[in-house]
Length: 456
Ligand code: 5AD
Ligand code: SF4
Image (cartoon, rainbow, N blue to C red; front, side, top):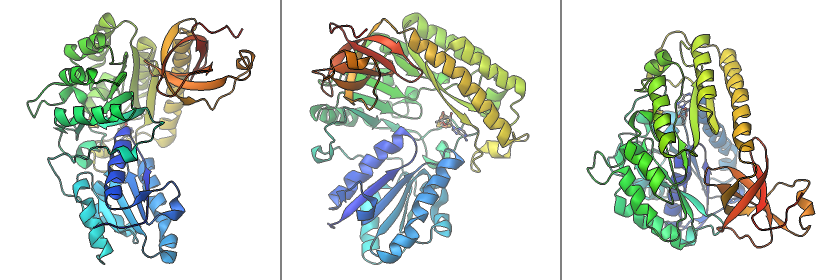
């Protein structure tokens, strides 16, 4: 059916949810709803949820909870809980959000339209948390492109079968399945034609891409995407350390568009914790993998995910994690306090760590990393980095005024994913510009286009 009205889509969580929300917006647009950024105008509100940590889950309930009052004044408003919390909670979601209309699980997108029809024709409370071995395919459509967005996410596989003991993903995103490479190439070609210059390929463990389906491997997929005209940069997340192959390392080394950056979540530096997490590698194996990688790609930027306060993590285990940070010197990390998820096995593990202790460890870890992030950035001062221009910079800085008061301050990212600000007369979104780095801060670099006058 076709409807009229506005749709507001609110996204919580990871990059995959950002991609999924774009697909939900496409479905809504095919049903006649126009996208709005003004929640008050909405006739349908979708909250695309995340259940990886308690805080994210609570955010979803509090966002949707607000609509109790609004729906009293606007009874035709449709409210939808989509994604991981929806999958996890099913009809239990109505206990906390009685005014909710649709609970749309992670594998129910292809049936979303049907559920909207049902609610429009008077059905109360639709729940769809059925599993599916298929991946919902919705090709981007040129009317939904934001011209200024030169960088986009593209999910290449869904689900996970690694069953790390702290993680809900295998329970809420289902079995691992990969998209057809032809569909991925078609989608990225369309994106490139619409002006997209950088894609980030998403999957819980990209190394096992295509393995079940018996199609092409992940490095082979990278080689296909490397051929697409208009795409300048290819990023990907996430690689699992236990399956990082030499072929992937060679692909990073040899394919010109694949960025010189790897996100390789380690989670802990302690072998006893890694074992309890069911990660499938030891600290030594992880370090060896990094050495293999650095041998082939000496300048590679590295980032990781860490969890502190996993059940039974002793002070010494935590120091092992701190020491791993010192040993590897990551460019950046994402660190989290362990969050107990009732559907994941670790929820029942003995020796849970006190919340205050977890936060204390988290702060210590972040403070230590801050030094390395800054050091890595400072090492770049004087070097020339190719920057893909993303837009105008919101930042102002003394000294920049001196190099031409009328120059626009722009921002972009280096291949190693560092934010770079610079003044420029001509730079446009989507351009690649060589920038000589003049100053480095923990979270950004400052420089000026090579060839332009020095600003100090
Ligand atoms: N508690 C804290 N962090 C978690 N992550 C996954 N599950 C949990 C949890 N229960 C983190 C991991 C993962 C990242 C996406 O989220 O570090 O790599
Ligand atoms: Fe979760 Fe582990 Fe799968 Fe990553 S690999 S999604 S942490 S179960």
